[in-house]
Image 1 (cartoon, rainbow, N blue to C red):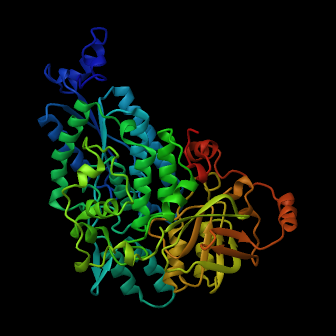
Image 2 (cartoon, rainbow, N blue to C red):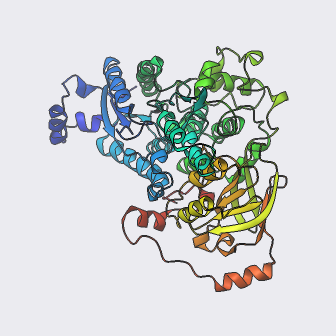
Length: 558
């Protein structure tokens, strides 16, 4: 098998002397010109703990590729820190970054004619962006997740990024003083790695491992665990094996492997963002996977992981009981996963899990057996109704109840909502409505972690619901519904709601409705006009022009 079939068009073709001169200048030898070239894409950058260690991993993978008789060539792409940008206009760029990452990896790999791709990723949008690029390229590829951070500690309690957000609500409510508030912030994140709960980063990393695009244990090994660096050797050997097998992403992904990923998301109470991202991943692979498929998988999958944000534990705790492979083994043995799906090891999922030690359920309460599941079905629920004719996504862990009916308190944008909640405008029994924050209206569909954290911190989490055409952080918990489509700026019903309207949300029949007549809705619709676009140039302008609905994964190449 010729391993350098892409790079050889530059290194072996006599009509490409300039290409060869450039490669010699970059340090390649005559011997190197005969080898496969591995593009090692890093989303590493200094200003974010999720990503600040990734360039070190990139360098390790490069060394190991060279040892394995290949040429490792590193390059970088962008990242956005959700934790830093949350609650500001910077969050408008977060989802946008997913598609920029996919576009930039595709660009470099094709322009440079690299033979294979290793993508080293950290914060939330890095993972789906990398997978989308892999599927477009269809060259041997592996995703390597940088791992999650350790938990912070304060007064004997574990802390994480959400602790910092909720501390603000606690301070506003008078539950903690300024000194405690500052200490929680300083201690919440002790070092490198992505946010530690089953938030979006860990949701996507573990689901992608289950889908077969990352090596076993990759998602659950913590960032600062010594075994994370040793993954570089495993990764280099694996990418060479993929080249030798000529096993490519489109040979690995299938509807069944996406179902595996979504099963794991539901079993562990993962992020609603997984819906957006796997819709986009399916689109990149030309696989028909819809909101109805998410509901179907959720209906048959028990929630067995007691993980934050709704539960007690973090990914470091999952690592301690055998990591994601141990959980996958249990799900496989009980008929929830398709074991015949191919993976980047060159083996099937079942073959990868054959020698994994089983979970000892008697010795831990992080993961439960199906008979004692925290919820009989998954946490991701797809809702429809006059408020969401094309669907909406709810995250129902079971702690919130299954039915909520209350008075709408409407805000046109997140900042107005944050101010209103802080000023006491929201009362028990209310439904907070945040609109004009969808893919086009945002633009960029920002996450609403700050308002949900303010609600939780103020002690209103069990008595207030929140709905939006934006989306939620994986750290969000409570009775929340996002991804409402059509979004407000496209004339969706959420743009017609008025403060005081009654809204009914049911996870019993998966419905979401504003309780006013069709006649009243029609009259309001006739009076409604779309607001002016918020941006007239630049990336957010281009994004608003090209982005598809949240029900289609917010892809920009539909």
